[in-house]
Length: 100
Image (cartoon, rainbow, N blue to C red; front, side, top):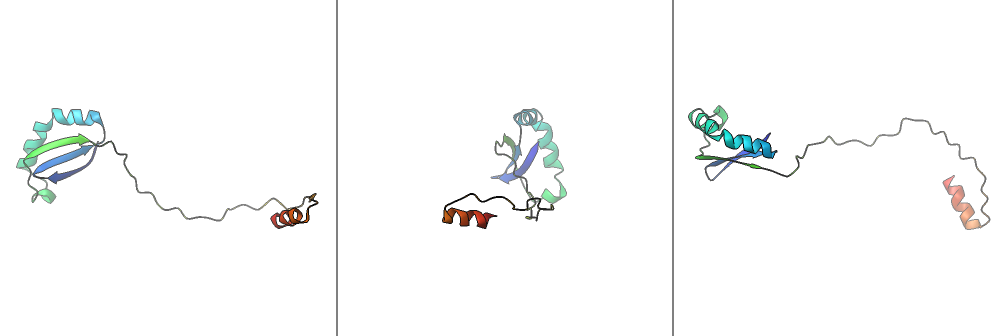
């Protein structure tokens, strides 16, 4: 619902991820504003704000993913490379032999 919040020009902004969440936030904004001004969280006592606002961010949430390591396949090669090389052209015959 709430992605993050920040203070800018003495306005506390809440960034929401759904329009329905913003509508609900707008309905209860007065009941949020009063307790936050009277009893701010311990970590946020130095932040002063005069107003609350919310908006919906339409940017997708970027999740941090673990970097995957390339791994060696864990299977035994079933191909033996035995086939006929019917190429009559010497250059093409050599290329097919390199592939084998």
